[in-house]
Image (cartoon, rainbow, N blue to C red; front, top):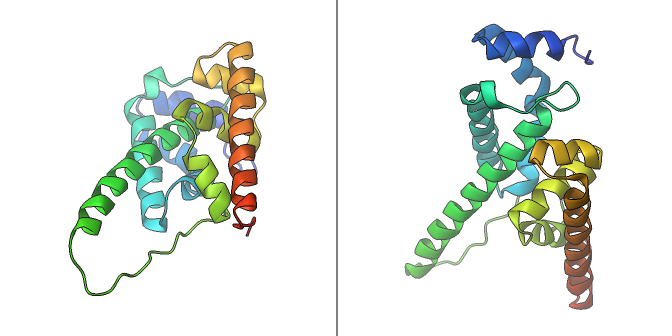
Length: 186
């Protein structure tokens, strides 16, 4: 697969699997921006998105021999890994937030959410189960075909379609509920 920046992933990835760090750097350069944008949608801050991106690529390197290549690319696997890392970051952030909220403080300041999504969409996505979020992100946000997403997630095509329909319905219901409560779509 020839890309816009001139890197041939079909050549670089096998070399990276064999332990070639420069070949892995080429794959990183090829996909880092897209993984970062994906992570930005799932976590609250740019710093967290940077951490998620770094962790996803660390896992890609660490597990390179086991990575499922779909359509000649490791990007789908890396996106799913970033989704899982983001869930862990959110859980950690929630634990931290509960601790901080329990402490007395003189001024209650809200922390802004740095995302390209509306607050309603962000809330709808973060309310999904991990399996539903993974398929929704790969197909509806990242533009992969359902059959490609199924291969990355190790699902049958029927199971992938079922999860995707369920995820879409839950997001739609969350957005409708937000609108009915006066939240709007921002």
